[in-house]
Image 1 (cartoon, rainbow, N blue to C red):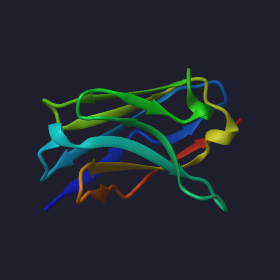
Image 2: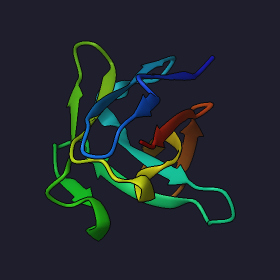
Image 3: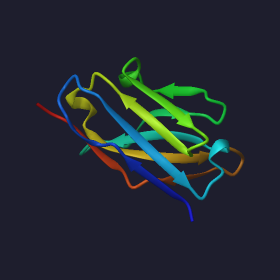
Image 4: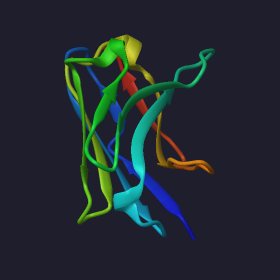
Length: 118
C-alpha cells in the first residue's frame, strides 16, 4: 500500500518561511521523481517544484529563488523549503511520486494547507 503523508503546512505571515515534508512508504523511493503541486481556490493545480531520481530540480517561475526542493532517499522523504512567502503562495500543497517511463503513473498525498496572511 502506497502512502504519501505531507506535513508542515500552516499559517505564516508574509515574508515568513515554512518547510513541507512528504514521507513516502510502499514504493522504491529512490527511483521515483518527487515533487509538489499546489491548488488555490478557483485555480488549476500547478506544478511548484520537482526533483528527479538523479537529483535534477525544476521550479515554477513564480517560486524560483524562494523555494528549494530536496530529497532524502534514506528517509524516503521529500522536502519543500519555502522562504519569502507571499499571499499568492496560499494554497493546498500536494506531494506526488511519479514513475517516469513508457507506462508512467503517479501517487498523490492528501494535501496540506499553506496560508500566508497578516
